[in-house]
Image 1 (cartoon, rainbow, N blue to C red):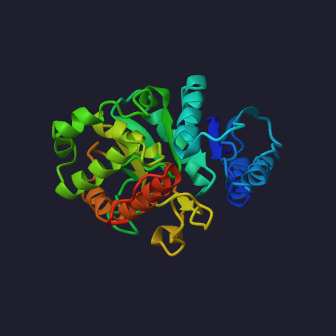
Image 2: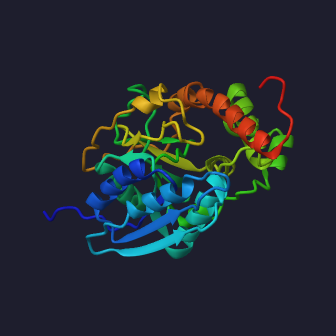
Length: 314
């Protein structure tokens, strides 16, 4: 049998962290994708070290010593944590019909690439599946017999998708008021706590008080009843809990301690295409229970920069 070789395009989103960028790029370099998209945001106004650090991060991805078609989208100015990745991913899916997406702080296990490629092919024409996810945050709980399970959460720490799914992404969340005011989130989630958390998250994204793009992608999956695959074993180590991070500065977080484990092949596909409710419930009350404090800190940053008053609870 011939050794497996990656055929799927890979996109890397980077900014101003050469240290983590170099580690993630080396993992991509080992996988040797035939097509590589490099999406880099520009320096932020008022951040004097950004220029040198952005340049250093871009330099880290220049060692392309395999046969590869490279596409670069390097910004001179700064689009931010929301528009930067969102417009970059728009560009990727306008160019190719499917791709693997990594950010500069999401270090994949080598088997992540094959897992993504095989499931991109397996579910290519199945509209029910919108995302191939590489992150498992169950900490040994809810381990399926198959190689992966189905979730409503399309975690963005290492993932893959198709143009057919990304077409539903809307950065401005134009449908959110209709969903919120019609009580439709309760119909989608069926969990009062999850509704509370996501109402706050989508309000913040809709009002642009939180600079993000991933909540909009989750919203697209929610309202279109999209499924994401979650691997049996975690395939992404998050290395972005650093002092210079925008949202994730808590190095003591247990998500900073996630380890990866290679996934075995051939993949064992689930017999039934049913969402794992218990695993999603655990995610609602652990992972997304941790994030309200991050959203609040992010809002505080934005409002201070804009000179707006702070809520008394902050």
